[in-house]
Length: 488
Image 1: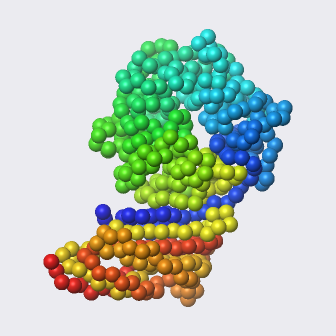
Image 2: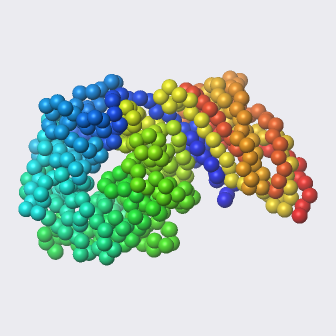
């Protein structure tokens, strides 16, 4: 590993030339039950947020205004649109001449639609479609709404610029060589040469077939563009993937995979994975937690972050792998027990037990502190064959207030003890002077004190730990005082 890499990077977010204690979250809305879907409606003049809640009687609640909420717009036991028994919905926003609509399916209940004011059941018909209860995911491609039927290779699509009515069936099963069933329907725009739209169908076995064109009923306007293999998707539907510029990223048993790269490489080469340095961690999580609901792949464009949500205990605890989309560096978040995610133009929300949280907001988790822990890669300090006796360690940090902070070292690839924390505060006489690359919402002061540490070995790994609450802290470098010992 390179010395600037990390063996452990929990709740530190990597920037271009330093790391900072990650941002926190604030409680946006509260309710009774578990939020299993966050649904965002993008209207002409307003954006609305709905939470789909698993409780005694499942329900959908308008959470746009935040605060304590309880009134159902769908479900519950009152006279709302319909009773629902599954709060795990996929959805798309679809503009028509009659306005902007939400289309929602979950593979269990009747499909829903919303026009910005009124909720209703969706009318989607075909002789081979017993009911819309069997439609589990949807997409918009070439001005058409597309729907996939669970446990089959059946797709149903509507006429252009139409939100409901009679559908046309397209079975793609004969094209797939590995069996299984449809898992995901992906859309992406290739902007390399011309703005070409593609729709991709991903099987439960990780087989991907992509098409381009506008009308599947005509060979002249519908062309198979690619057929390739990736790892098995970690979950069905939209939660497994996200658009990423002209690319699509999908979380699989092989990590987070770029579909553009996967087309041009063999799966065994692992060249398409954007999670190379943490691939082992994600693979282990898929093995242990892959069957649990709550996996999600979410892009936060304005925050320059990609979140991969990992449910470590279903409907209870989660952690996230987070990538800086500019540098492609990864870290891990703990303390956000998210079951579902949703993004607006400028913000990301996650739903948990009784809460819809505004993520990446503020410098505390609700009203609790944030603990960040890091262990850098081992370094030989330019003298691989000589021992080093470490005496002092000085992390260069900037801080906006008081924090608990501690350092330690590990030697020769052996796990040492966690740092002991003590109170520190930045000095007002030594202000932040532009060394750090990020803009900060609070005034920062440089803290550059020496800490006594003890350890001897050929390879040294510094450990830095901090606990903050409503305080920003950034770490940019570390100095050491040491003696070189005998060589081999």
